[in-house]
Length: 160
Image (cartoon, rainbow, N blue to C red; front, side):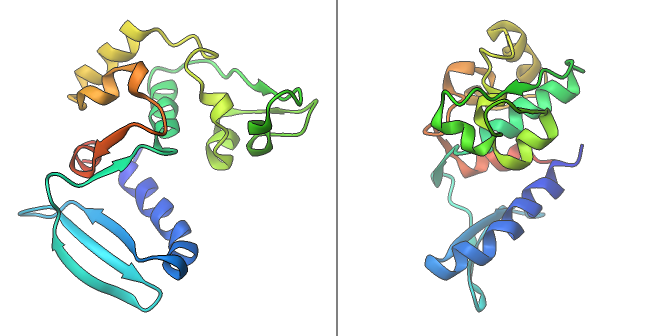
């Protein structure tokens, strides 16, 4: 799976809405150093070297990592059944319906990707990401949540 394309797609999809409110920051791997672009509705407004200390909340990206793990380890599909019990189901499906993995990723259905629901073991998860030399925050299921602050550089390291 080409994660570079997914990240670009996510950036392009959000650019029109974000560019109207505040400048969008986009970090990209460079040949010599990583770069930080500031974008507005009129285009690129500033380019600088990406600071090592720049952090961002993990936000919805955690779902991508669960999706990658599910796909790479060939886990069977486990559709999420919407029952109308959670306000978060608005991102998933209507009560009485279900949602599958690909649709859940597109719709940002966090309930589908909940590690507990999918019975993802902490040891198995950690070993998988350690073998891929991922940052420590990704190898721990306890830090895999939207509010976890991570360095932008650590996110870029995952895209090769």
